[in-house]
Image (cartoon, rainbow, N blue to C red):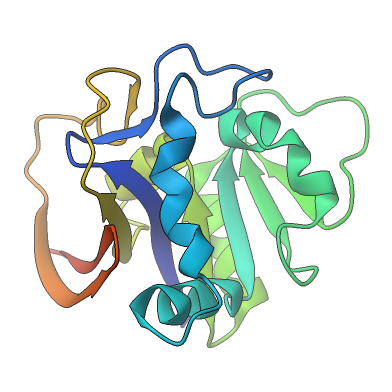
Length: 188
C-alpha cells in the first residue's frame, strides 16, 4: 500500500509561510527564504536526494489554499501525477490537467493511495497535513527545517486537536542551510 508523506519546508519556529501570504505573495513577507535550499536540488548531496525522492512520488494531495496560492501548478505538479485537492467547495469549472477535487479527507487518501499503487503520495499544505493527520491517514512527515526564525506567518501545526501524536524519527539528513527530518507517525 502507498505511503502518504507530507513534504514541507518550515522555519525553526514552525512557520511554512511568512506573514501576509496571498495570491500576490504566496509565501508571505520573507517566506521565500525558506526555499533557498532548493538551489541544491540537483546536487548529489542530501538535498538533491530528498528532492529526487519527492519528484518520484506517484500521486499528490494538496489543500485548496495551497493549490490556489501555487496558481494550480498549471494542472501538473510533477510528471502528470494525479493531484487530489481537498476542498469544502468544488468549483463549477472543470479542474486543469490531472487535478481532482475531493471533499472528504479519507476519500482523498484512498484515491491517492490507489493512484500511487505501491509508490508514495506527496502531501503539501498545512490544512491538508492536519486533516490527514487527524483522520489517521498521514503515514510520514518529511520536514525540511531551515534555520531561520520568521516570527509570524502560517504555522504548520496550528490547528491540531489536543490529542497527542507520537512520531518516530526514521531519517535525518543535513544539507547546507537545511535539516531534512523524516518522521513516521506512530499509531496506537
